[in-house]
Length: 88
Image (cartoon, rainbow, N blue to C red):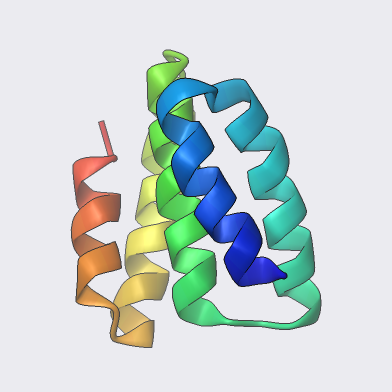
């Protein structure tokens, strides 16, 4: 379920960022109960993009930093790159 939500957040963050934020929080709730660090990092990176798209630069920077740090620990270089580019 978490991976499916992560994919949905990725898709929504491009065209419907407000919905991406809602779904991203749902994904983080699932991941809190069943941790998957690389998936969580991806969700955080996409939440950063959604916040950036909505003009919330400070929030984008916070989500991107969390996502990047988690991706580094999880050994997910593509997510590190995505989070870095979504930092604002």
